[in-house]
Image (cartoon, rainbow, N blue to C red; front, side, top):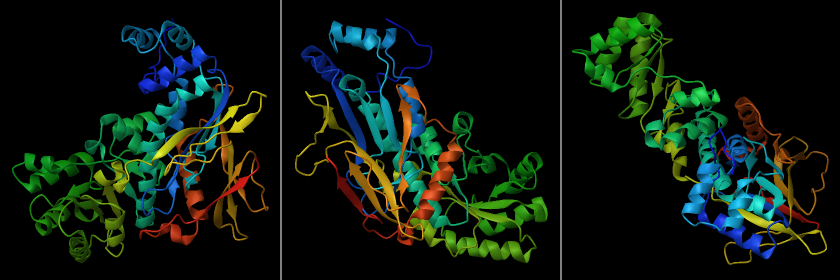
Length: 436
């Protein structure tokens, strides 16, 4: 048995993944060459597009998928699998190939977001961890994209850590940054992934002091006149007046966190301008989602802080991706497509490749998926699959900013209807080219 210094991800899986390996080892089929794919049969209800999130985290999980002494002892003590399987798992290392959509890319129903080519035993055990990462992070990145699209040029700040599991909160901050958010309140996301962090004070800081003036004075003295003062603890108009008296025309921003944000922002803007604080920004928070952000488009606000709705996927907390065996090695040594035929859960068999079909203006018109080989291009199309793991070695790792930039470019390529928040079908159709 071996030990590993880095945390293992091997038990972030379901019991039946390992019992399948046991049965396949015993029958002699465990080393049969296979192709697994992660995809979504449909987008969340009414969504026009999705955004791939979590690829970078998944690559880290694959790298850490090793069974050390602690993991193997747990499996043995709890009789999860037999000794033969324990011995196989003790030397497990993914040696196959993974390709898929690069992080930040837009996807549609049927898009082969992840393609895993390996033996059955090597590939099947990655199912649970792959779906856990992709479903969560993709849901957050997709929600973030809708919110930042609704916000236009106004920045969005992620601040939902207190509404999620502590590790999910870090992952959500990362995914939100890919989807266009400019910063997060979560310091661990800043340390671990380099997401810019920001924040000033909550209502408790104001309530600590004997007066609102004393609280504002303490904050400005410590953080500077360019700080953001929270002005809705008591009376908004009075607080704005105090904020300007304490910080002067250099006051950076005021934050509104309750009430009718549209009318309050309008009144505060007029109050600031009348006093000469024309450069003081107005930041709004308070249970915002993409619809509330869109409703504030005409309001004189400078940015949005978003929490609960974002970390919950704004009504779609999962991307509903599945991980399916789509091809296996035949007795003749060739790959043959396999697929579920069950009602409502049908899948398309065969190894997939994908490209984005574009018109002469560079606007996407279809998601084209080739079954058996890459689809044919008409010259304007863009290939979507990228290598992520080759012979067990990570080759697709990249800086988070690359995924963020990729998303901005992919979103700009979609038809304008993609930005509509009204319910509708995917903005482009998914077309299959059968080659098998």
